[in-house]
Image (tube, rainbow over all chains, first blue to last red; front, side, top):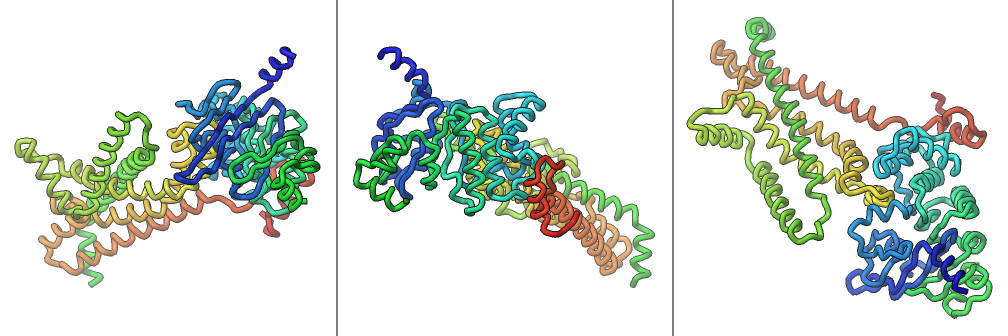
Length: 251
Length: 256
């Protein structure tokens, strides 16, 4: 029993306790708790305005939490003076891709390796090429972002996040800005990453992805976590009325 | 008429060329140094407010000084600035004036800097917030983000405004005749004092100004086009079928 406790702690990457966030008088997040262990694929679902993107941005410290703690390997980072150092270990993939427009595909992936981690050019290129192959974009190394389709951009953005070899990658509605044909190519890449053991926190409206790929689903509404559990619990046997309503609508 | 102009060229081409040289020197150096000043101020002004109270006050003071500089130089004519700086320097330097060419370079540079500061600030603001966030997400600091991501994109966006400043500077150096700087207009004035061919001389000078500014405009447009690159992308090698068919599709029927 005690042994199990210890291994569980070693597995823990992020633990959030009593997290709250207000913009002025508007309380967006209220008393949020949850834990992400190594290898977890956590999907955060919920309707628009439920606070899921804000939660993700708090984890990355893009938003400063109004209260509560965020523990990264047991260390509270919510008030750190050096968010840049913390963010090296926490990748992010954005809804609007946000590739660096002035750099080509390869440089998008190597910039962080060279200027943040101070790796040599050859080494950085090797790492970036490896991850560009993983997402199937290695044929486009010299392309500029504006020469790519939305799905291709997002795959490069995933490779960019992977290149930093973070411990966890946050996905903020990665397919919401894509047309239906391109959603598939991005979800496939994400599914492969999930099965390779990457720790992921995904805010998504893709219910089938949450159902098939996640091992932990968090349902949020009006700034609180209404219910969380395995995909089976949330999608097949929801306990809360609000969850039933949401899941029912999205069937 | 054309004969008169021909004669002026024959007689005074050395003076005219000297004037063109000085005009271009001051316009070019003034624009580049001014852009440098603008970039520094632009970066400084967009630094997020520090949390440390002492630094916060320091930044407030610096911000105030910088905006005073920008507004004073934007809200007074360059001709007056030239006089104030040139004779002001002489006053504090025991009546000894600064070298005229050096004065001209300094005046145009700091005047342009005031305009550039606003242009660069606009360029930085125009960059999508997502670019900043993406850079911070891979652990880049504010200064690295600015240097590698934001400033290169901002510079591309403000290039038309910078070209515009350059063209304005070529023409506006003419006001520096008030401190006796031997640029093109000053040379024309001197020539007229000798030959009394007022119209012909100034017509010639007008034509020279036009050729200078218009050719510079064309060159800068070409540079802009070059910087934008192609809209489509040809896939390297043929690692997979999928990529190749995609490349064909993206070429949109246009073979290159």
